[in-house]
Image 1 (cartoon, rainbow, N blue to C red):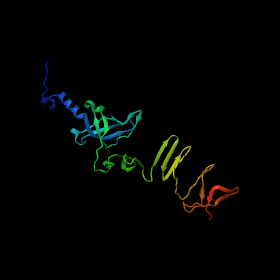
Image 2 (cartoon, rainbow, N blue to C red):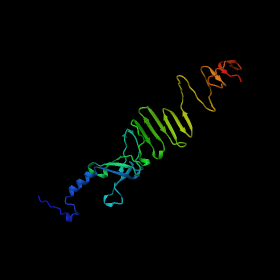
Image 3 (cartoon, helix red, strand yellow):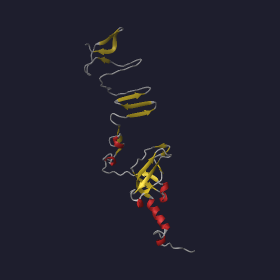
Length: 236
């Protein structure tokens, strides 16, 4: 077997191309960069990732389109796309960037849109860009909080043929039946209460025209059929 040695003077300074390729691949197995371009309309959606300073041609790399990934993508699925400028980690099997796997690699900084969302362990909080809503859970308190944009947008919960919509200062509840069970007391305060129904039934005593919630007048409401059995009114 005859082996021809490569002279660096005639090969651009590369005396062993195989070693150089192996070194390059080893360096490309894991790389950190930023999302340069996004295309959510591709199938599947994809990103182009940049490494280095684009003004430094010798050390700048811009990948081809790499498919977007999700935490779950089979059966149960979730989607939250990366956006331009976000930090990512790129995992390339065998150092092959053309088939690399893109993962978010957020690192907290002092910049307003890169700060941590909580300073407490046991609290999960997700804040959307430009403070356009958040969702959080405090494990110690067992407390869920969903916040929308004040005076804008809506929050909707749907399931089992029912829906709750919070929008423009109004809560709209829609269901075939609504059952409220209060073990001790049900209390509401409002300027005006309107009820429309083909029938309105109350079980138990009903007091009308009270000036104080503790009033319990003894005067029965009188109807055409006679005094009501369990309806009482304060005489004016």
